[in-house]
Image 1 (cartoon, rainbow, N blue to C red):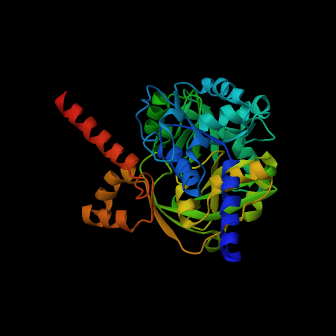
Image 2 (image 1 turned 180 degrees about the vertical axis):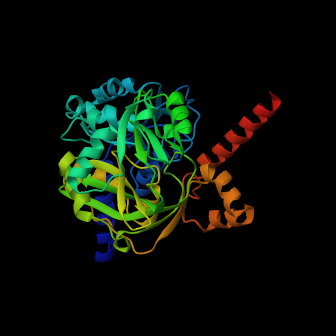
Image 3 (image 1 turned 120 degrees about the vertical axis):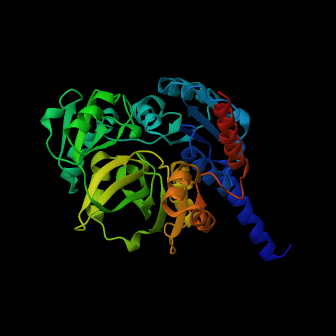
Length: 400
């Protein structure tokens, strides 16, 4: 055996040993966010025998978008209906004495896992905070800590849904005071006058809302990253510039560019993450107004719905998080990239995209995009499953 061949085999064996030592639980909803994390780990070479997925939502079938991926065994996908079931399920899974790394892909999953960190830390390497997660999920508390860290925030006020008369700045947006309990991003609304605001407050599911001055934006961007050891190491490879998005979500057709291309307040970002003592995958959301002022919107203490574009660009944040939790050091992985890429969440973008740019241009953008939410030439079954699901749903609707 030649020296070169021996070195190659040793390198392969070392890589296999690293992958075989990483066991992961992905906790989230039936969403491309969860799929993106699964693909990020599978594409890196973590065996599907070492990946478990816990899906939370009502009436989720075992035959679903996630279970169709080639990177997971169908039997290793578990479906539950309530967030309260997450911790008991994790405790039961720990009966096999394996230590696993947790990645959260929804706000509810993050609140459950981080909120019960002390109960599961013996068996799991999980996202964590040094403050109370239930308070930090509040827009009001996030805003206070963000201001203390040096961020700008739009004028805002927290009101009962019965007190629209206490606000007089228009246009404005309303957000549920908590991202998880009693509301979500689907409850975010724009009101142009007091009548519209009163209507939105009457129809929202939340008891308390944050009302905020509407910022006329020059751009809306996210910093998608990974924080280790409570902010001692913060990895932010790039930023998203959201070009086109559906209502009430930050997932949209976007350009993901190297962080070196963005002039932003790095010190405030680092101060904020260290202040809350967060460890885990995250995204920070901002709006830049026409005068170039950046306004903090929120932090998501979980993997972001757009985050697969980071992996496609060349930085595998889910793998970096897992590797660090198992080995206590960073992997020999790229932490930055050079070329911007386009990301398209094709199924949520198609209607808005065709309406905005027309069919031909949208199809061109689809094939030009280097990263997609579901479409993936290396893992096509979820894409075909989603197509079939949409067609069947429309046929059933037309027959009713």
